[in-house]
Image (cartoon, rainbow, N blue to C red; front, side, top):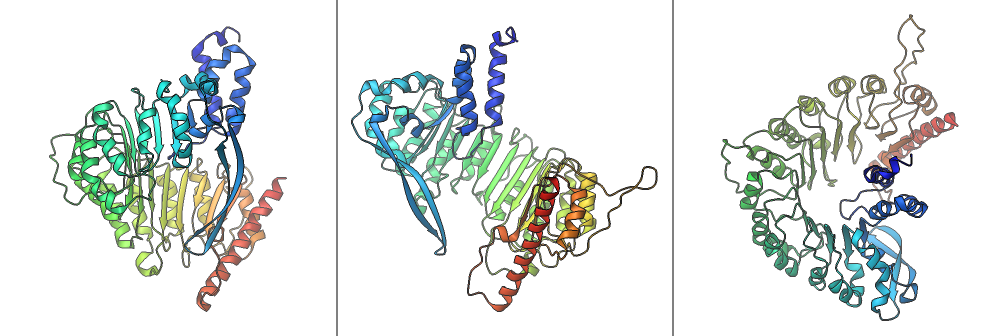
Length: 538
């Protein structure tokens, strides 16, 4: 063992495994690790010198500006808890508790001693506008002692404080995340390609509280910036600021070329691309947050199929069943059949919908059977997804490697046709399935087949399924269902129902009250099923 610990690569691998096992990932902020993961690394760092540098490098790899502030002497600041109440949509109330830090004396050079020790380890820094008041007192130190190895900067400041970004810019930066659209940010973007030609990861305007008129005027600036970047591998645009020239530039990039694209819209004035070249040659992940037409327009615009591994779309307005069918057909026509592993379509939860128009049919879902290597399929409908046992059976046999299959609805599926019987098929055909979401009619409970060796088959069992989302699935005999489920999914630890997300409000119509009452009753029955399953394992 001692000889192994003399190999730096092995020590680093050990520390990395410990860190990754306990560290969450956030799209909007760097991976700052969980308390448990960082605590274990801290213990490792002081256990032996041989671990210290590797553990510290991981502990300080990604930090927030607040973490840097806490490296100052404790007599520099004071902290206290602040309680606040936030109202959304005029009805929902959320109580929050956050820690607030205030500086209580001026800072001098000696106060930054600890930061100076850890600064070389920092690769990613997240700085939000809630810490703006600390910038004037700390920036002189960062001006003279920059973070020398900073690779990723996540800057969430608005107009008044954006210019402070200059103190943190390292020539080695390859990842840049700018949260708020502002005039200062647009001015900065104009010089971005010249200052950071090696930039590989760029995310713009993810904090959606900017001025709409400013976002519109940002299109030419964003376009000029993108057309000047030739090493970009990942791009996220949370506002509709992508124009045709910029998109055409991205399509023609060669190695290294774009691998991940996340956009909020596709321009309508796209010109046809020539068919003689391979466009978006390295694109593997594509995400839309837009109307459904933009997603379709992009796939139809590309002259050849894309070798995507992941496709996802968050639709801003609830798509009709016909629009959803068109989206699925376009996906089949625009994505290489054998490459796609992960497909998700999320509809908006729009009010006043008609189930006859928005109910997604099983025939539409069968369109996806062209993709035979799926590991995750998630489809959210505003008003139900209609599947039967035959469709679920075909899904199970078409996607034997599936790990996540979620067919969800915000309002539930009226009169679901699938039954408990289809769950046994999934247990038999899909041994890797861990998450399942489906509306089914659990009124009738299949008989358990406890076969004897050589005298017929027994009911199939899957030990992989952990989470089941049943929406507002009808159920009348929870004890019988629990007995059956105990055999089919013995390691199930969670059952989610529509009532988990449904906010019950007063003043509903009589018809609405009847629906909600049924939903609540079904929810209680399913929770009883889960309770019985958990008790049986104790």
